[in-house]
Image: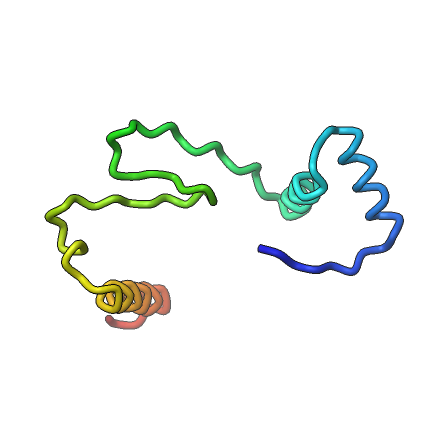
Length: 101
């Protein structure tokens, strides 16, 4: 996600200098600093999946689930799939709020 921050010049200069000295991109360096400041662990490497796995990891690191040719989703329209997703999200939200579904 892109964002714009208004940071003091001396901090930006120091981050750029450190990035160059470490042979890293500014983006990677800032991401690491933010993770450390927020107490977040570094992201785990995606597990290696077998080529015949129904799960693939896309270029953004998100899992993509491939269904078989006879799966119900293969016969659904985009609108039906989106409605199914919205229904599932609504149900999850209701359960988190402690309300009956």
